Amino acid sequence: MRTTVGIIGAGPAGLLLARLLHNAGIDSVVLESRDRAYVEQRQRAGILEQGTVDVLRAAGAGERMDREGLRHDGIELRFARRRHRVDFPALTGGRSVMVYAQTEVCKDLIALQLKEGGPLLFGAEALAVEGADTDSPRVRFRREGREEVLECAYVVGCDGSYGVARRAIPEELTRVYERTYPFGWLGILADVPPSHDELVYARHERGFALLSMRSPVVSRLYLQVPAETDAAAWSDGEIWDELERRFETADDWRLERGPITAKSVTPMRSHVHEPMRYGRLFLAGDAAHIVPPTGAKGLNLAVGDVVTFARALAHQAATGSDDLLDAYSPTCLRRVWQAERFSYEMTAMLHRAPGATPFEDRIQLARLERLASSRAAEQDLAEAYTGFLLE
Ligand code: APR
Ligand code: PHB
Image 1: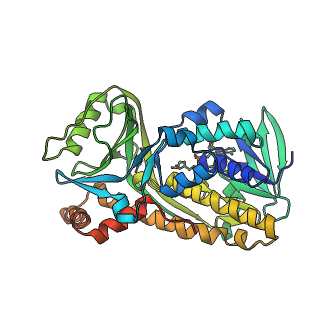
Image 2: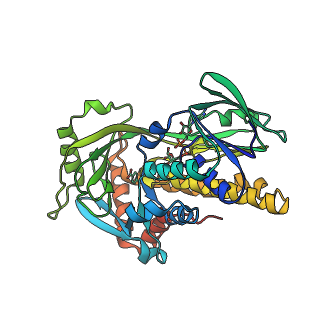
């Protein structure tokens, strides 16, 4: 099998890349190890930056998002039983975000790809990328028990945090930057209308909590828990009691309870793989970088990477110049590090680290007080949350 761009992985990065290339008249093949149902059901985050919304619309993948997504003009910070709203459009010259689940983005992109795009092969597991430093890289993969080879002009590893693509980059050229956090998030889906119409990020002595949503009738809520927590160890009643404590306010706000339909624990990690390119192999999305979910940046970073690659390749096709492809890694990494910084700072400001000292508690509260009283501080958060503009 032969194609121009071999794409490993059909998460949001690989699927959107296939769509962008199709629109630019460049052919591709997507290899995905799991089956379609698995990819469409995986629960992930749900905040799309303004720039991501614009990209999906321009790619012709925004129709259902525009119908069913919820536009959000702010978030609430909750601390010391107080509530402070951050007004995005007022602070950023009109920017907002969209609440539309990543699984829904994937469903929309899969349907489009199968209808009008190039091959999207489920149950096709990439085993290795070979010849990345030559003009004809190859992906060896296994499908239905048989080994096959995909011959490419370029390979893009969109194969997530445990993928195989980045192993083809020689270790002596690689630098990995990492941080693990001593806590994770216990996330639930519940059949109950969200108790607030915007997201609530709560800092509490007992730990962080987040109120989010999937629709006007489905809530998504998270609790900071120790790393390695087993979700089954928490009963539904215990989860609601703990959420209630952490979201408590001095006014008459109430948390509505409802049946919990899903429960899982997400670990928290920061990770950057440099460089994001070796020869004709490019890394995009989680394959190159992980952020803790507090800043809601994971999906948006993946979108930024594949837009940067698709533009660079279209430029190459139109002009014969490799300039933009050569700039891919440094261009992406500037944006990636800003998102890493923001995600790290949001995490540090809102979570209670085990063994945190009273001094550290006071510093967290002082940061939140500063946000609630300084337009400059608030503007910095609003700009980062609604998105770093693509270069
Ligand atoms: N061969 C084929 N496919 C593979 C292989 C392999 N060897 N290894 C992994 N994959 C597939 C996975 O099954 C998955 O569908 O690659 C895909 C990677 O998708 P994601 O993990 O969703 O990563 P990405 O597309 O970069 O999206 C980033 O996902 O984890 C969230 O918070 C993150 O929102 C961000 C988004
Ligand atoms: C979510 O809705 O899943 C979500 C929202 C905001 C975050 C993280 C996750 O920061």
